[in-house]
Image (cartoon, rainbow, N blue to C red; front, side, top):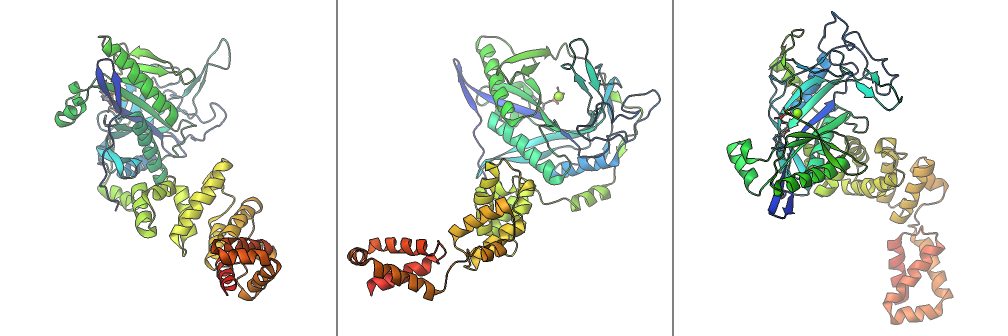
Length: 503
Ligand code: ADP
Ligand code: MG
């Protein structure tokens, strides 16, 4: 397992006119469950479908329609809980959260307030090698998503698309343990990485399948430690909430803007109102939206249409025994098995697709060489084309083939790079390409010797100079490489040139 001896990163400090301030952040991440059907109906969850085409009578809240729980979604919530080392509640229940909104036909959202399916867990958020913070997860509950109101298609009318209505969400609620904007982004990235490894959510932030409500407050140095000792929220500042953030960059910028807004108010002798905050990504401006005091009373009560959810420990155990290897464990294994640095292991395990690609390439080969080729050559080339690893034009078998050719001394490292580019752009079997294009390294000393002799014979002046100054032997090596089209084994050339000049 991963060696968890790390140092905690320092909290982000902002200097104000009246002294230093520290940030305290807690997040509610909504991750859409990767299910084909909705949480309480059989309607499809397919993204990008014709508006209002994935809507069942249940989703449209037709009178008399009853919700039926989707077992697959429950399983994904349990898997996610297990992936976050969290307590799984064998008893959970659904509640109605009542509010009126045009994209919510039921007039309430079915959620889990009093008895969530997942309790306390934790995640390790890596900031840099050897530096990480443990962020506690308070709970995960299952709930329905709302629909979408469209206000920008017509000057006089608004439209409602109910395709998303009733889609299953896992709301992952953290403790206020996040201490800065970079850490907040790293936390979202880690949660996203874990759900992607688990396959419980695709984590696609652009499509809104993973989005975060970010709660921000500021306090004086030392106050947070008092909160951790006592559990008393009174030591923390009043928080404000940035809703539905779906970009790592925006999350960081918005947190800083909001913290500065709060500090300015506090230093001016004012008080923070617990507001929802709107952040404009175009201008970077921040403005309070509505006060929580004015917000609706949700009149939560147990949903009478659904029985409490009771699951068996044996089912949880079975799910647990089928969990895939998770990012921290995979990273530790890569470091141990392939002798790679924590940095390289982090890069290779960032996405499960990259990790799988690497493992397939490294199978039966030198792991360090494979890691080198995947990280430096392949990732570098893919980045240039903005191409995802899943669309890589070079397969692990092809890259492995190139590595084998280097290992067997059939080609030099330099030729290997040319070969890689050919395979990347034209495809094909590396072995065949090397054969058909005569790229094989010349290791036959007879042939190299002939080339060395020829160049020595043609350049008596250079020979005299090189004999006086052995450093100039490099010129002959260069000439031989040129004469052989870069295919001569550099080691053999070096040895022969030294021998011939010396003798
Ligand atoms: P609500 O029911 O209003 O959503 P919760 O108590 O569930 O409130 O908290 C929501 C989120 O706000 C949690 O992630 C929690 O950790 C975070 N939070 C609570 N207090 C603070 C605070 N003072 N500063 C920053 N985040 C906070
Ligand atoms: Mg909330």
